[in-house]
Image (cartoon, rainbow, N blue to C red; front, side, top):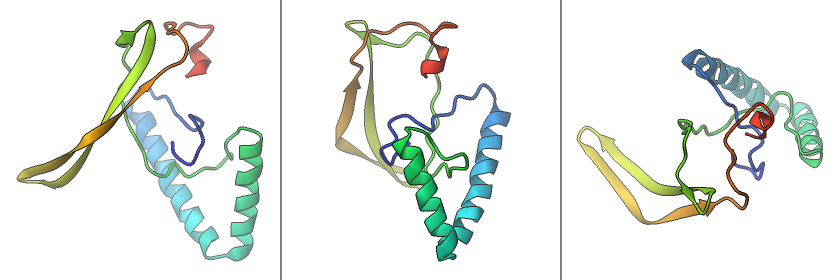
Length: 127
């Protein structure tokens, strides 16, 4: 998630129905947010709720998911010096038929600061 939430709002799903549920909630909340944008009284209430949630390192109960990213969980991740890492390559699709894409020359690499520990019943909530 973006907006400086640093991982808050990540939802782990195990099947496609959970993805569909999340998309439906997002659609419903988008309609609600649109009403708020058009009503200054509701909008200021929403801003106050979001501000309070961020101060408490939480998410508002009803949150719009905004831009979504889907990725597959890798059960045995590649490690460098026993730490996880990821690399991002940015691609802009110009068209699908015919496929035309632009790949940026620059990307992003991120490295964890703690050693990787495989998920278990004690740490599964650290996702």
